[in-house]
Image (cartoon, rainbow, N blue to C red; front, top):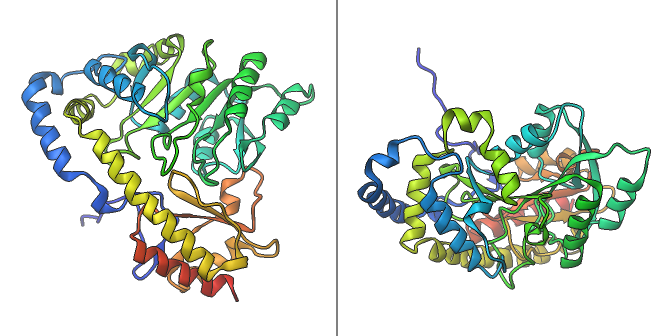
Length: 384
């Protein structure tokens, strides 16, 4: 008997507005753009589209991406093609970086809170995960320095950070702290994995430049992704780093054996860039998400008033809500789901299991009217 396989990654119960997923709404997928891009790619690259790719990635896409990023207000730096390496997405890049730059038993520092799924990658590599506190301006560089200077603490091989519109908190690492973090990495000899997948999704003034803009020695690996600015199904992203680090990525056994990663998709995305279709798509996403941020913030203020504290994010996908200390968001989740709404409880974002009174909600998947209804349902649970 044949078994039924899921057609999409997420499964949401009927009648539930599930704000736990950082996935774009189906209508935001640029179907017409990809139809035209596929025709253009096939007409211009033909047999090369189906060949093994170069180790660094599809050359025309590397050149086009470098030129595109160099023009973005959120980057404010010249990006050279030699500083880019194409990957199968940010998650693959993180996994590959752990293979290259860490060994079993090594220590990796992460933010508290941090992206909840990344911990599984670090566990797969048998790394010891230690959290570093954060505040409204991101990772606390002074506390990090005290940890690094403590002789009783193990020296980290890696530090993982989401400096721009952090997942889950939405915070932005200040310019001063960006410089301080790069300085600490250079002084103490660890590599920074900077997850910059939201760098281009700002809904107001652009954020500070990515950490790699301050690195001239090769201590920062910046991770970008087309998942957030085109479509997650592409499974295509990039590493931006000093050329010495890029050569390390190119020299891995996986790349040597299989060639460039996700080559055929790279030819498709190159067509999108080559025809000038990426910038309008990002503008559309910024406009759409900005309206959702405003609507969700207004609904939270109307229906939850003093029941939650939050800062409306200036970009990215998420709101981080802090409830009164006695509230256990994990324990309340089943009640919320019975009321027709779901979210991601805070402890899942903490290596130490903290943030029991916090929760993360995303505005990426649902339209404004659905977000407003979801907050009303959430209020039924949190105001009891």
